[in-house]
Image (cartoon, rainbow, N blue to C red; front, side):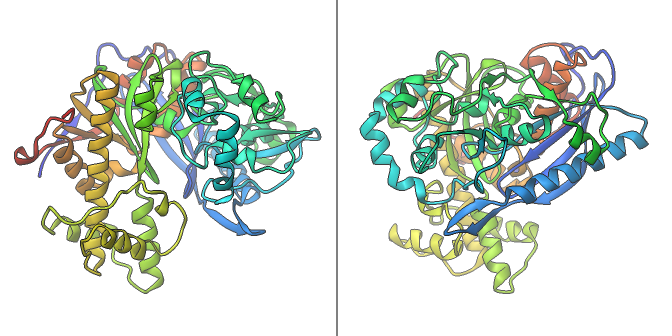
Length: 500
C-alpha cells in the first residue's frame, strides 16, 4: 500500500476573497444530518465547524417506509439555534443558510402550506408496481432521450405514479421542503429537479410533455431556482425559534448533496473522475453537455445537473450502506468490534476473494445484510466464510470492482480519458477502499475532503454573497487550499487500462 500525504497551499488562481463571513450549511444524508458553520479565507480555504449532529433514517409507519420529517425538521431548527448562538458568541453574523439532502424524495404540501402526509422513503417498495405503467405511457427510450436519467425504480416519477391523488398539492423535494418551512417560499432547486425523471436535460426546464403523459398537474412542482439564487428570508416564527438575524436569507445551493460534493472536488484540471462515497457511491465525470445516446441508456448512466449548469455524468453504485447495515446486524448479535479494527482485519485477508454486485437492488432495503451478502455469494458458486472480516473484505472488493467497471464505462461512453480518481465523502477515510480502488482502476486515488458536500454548500453561498469570486476551478482551488489530501498509488501488479 503506497500512500503519500500532501498538504496543499492556495494556488495562484484561487478565488478572490473580499471579506470574512459565516455561512450555515444544513447537510442531511440518508443516515445522519448536521448543521455546520463555514468560514472562507484566501489563505486557509474553507473551514467548517460542526454545530449539531443528529441521526436520520427510515421508519416503518402505516405499512410503509417513511422519513420522520417532523423530527428531522425539529433537529434542523435546533441546529440553527445553536449556530446562531455560536456565531453571536464569536462576534460573527450568519449571512445565509444553504440546504442539501439526498435526492428523489418529496413531501406533498397543500394550498394552506400544510404537509399532507409523512414523506415516503425511496427505500419503500411502493414504486416497483408503477414502473410498467409509467413505461407504457412513456417508453424508456423516450424518457432517457429527454431526461438522461439513470433508471432506478425509486426515481421521483415512479413514486408520483403511486400517489392516489395529486390535485391541490405541490411536490417539494426534501431540501425544498425544508427551505419552504424556513421561508414560506416554494421553489425547486435545479440539481435536485434533475433527479426526478421529469426534467429536460438539454433545456434545463421541466419536461411538461411527460407531466401531461402521466396525467400529473403541470404546477405539481414549484418554479425552478439555480444554485446561488436567493430563496427568501426567514419567517418571523423561525427567527423567534432560532435567534437568527431578521435579514438571514436561505440561498439555493447544489441541493442534491452529490452536486455540492462534486463542486468541492479539489481537482487541478479537467481530466478527473470522482467518487462521492457515502451511503451510496456516485461514480462519474463532469461534462458540459449531457450524453443521451442509446448506449448510455443501456449502460444506465445518468445526466444530472451540477453547480454552474455542469453535467454530473455518473452511475449509482452500491455504497457504504452495505457496511453500516452489516455493523447494525452484528451489533444486534453482540459483536461490536470498532470499524478501524474490522477494516484492518479485512485488509489482512488475501486478495481474490468472492465478490457481489454491490448495486443489486436486492441490497436496497434494510434487513439482515450479512445473510443477504452470503446468499449472493452462494449464487455465484462461491462460499463466503461466516466471519465479519471476510464479509467486510467482500464488500470492499466488490465496491472497488464496481467503481472500476463504472469508470471504464464512463470513459468509453464519453470518449474521455481520466488520469486521477478523487474520492470525497466518508469513504475517503476508508484506507482499504481507497487503496483497492486505486488497484482496481489502475489510477492514482486522491482522498478528501471528507466534508466535501458541506464545503460545496458553503462555497456556493459565499460566492452568492460576494465573498468568493470565480467559477468552479476557483472554488475548487479554495477547497484544496485548506485540505490535507492523501494519495494512493495503484499496485503495479494490478495496473490495467480502465478503458479496456
